[in-house]
Image 1 (cartoon, rainbow, N blue to C red):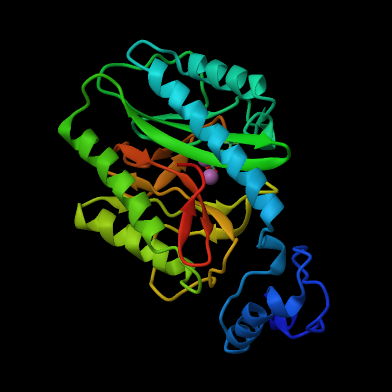
Image 2: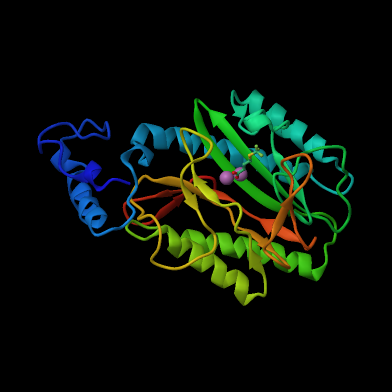
Length: 294
Ligand code: MF3
Ligand code: CO
Ligand code: CO
């Protein structure tokens, strides 16, 4: 990110670049000065184009809330014997009935409206005729486009009576998501999220997938920044208010390594161990974090 984007280019009384209609001096001036200084000192700072305005935040929040509602609907129907393509059909129909579009459908050629990732599947499982069986753990990942805005959320479901290990993995993966979310506040850094997640996973003897991560989101499905779920504190991009991104750690019971199946999408653990993932879309607020998809 070029430091010069934050070097003062607007006069104090001009309208702010963010489109708020407020004078620059009453809006982003102080933050820009701070970011310019950080950029000069070598920190990675967010480009302006990934900082959302109030109109965009409202739209993204509505889209996230719809995605959450869709998972609530799935909650009430999922169980032993359900085919993953039935889940896809519920998601597809519910999304359209609310005037939205399922973002996964045709995204880079993805053939369905949501992802369903069972047991050793890390992410991007394609709904098909597979029936959920007693003891399975499954992630359902839903992303809506509502009025042009994206909202992304996923949950794990326990089908029937999974093993103690499977249950623990699902619980720890969820805790990892919330440990990551706890790190989100202005001028904290992306690596702090990663570090908190990795430490929690390791404490329980689990590993963190490296190949896939969270992502900026809102006007597109996948925007900058890439959100690592493993790594070091005090590294990576500085966070500022109204950045919106997902945190979606994939936690494996065995090795962190993944491989991709012939279908070009389905990621599975290299050692066939279990994998679990939870996801939220979050916004950096003036003082901390808002979970848009909760
Ligand atoms: N929803 C996934 C994510 O959290 C992305 C799915 S891309 C798809 O980023 F094409 F597989 F749907
Ligand atoms: Co998702
Ligand atoms: Co996502």
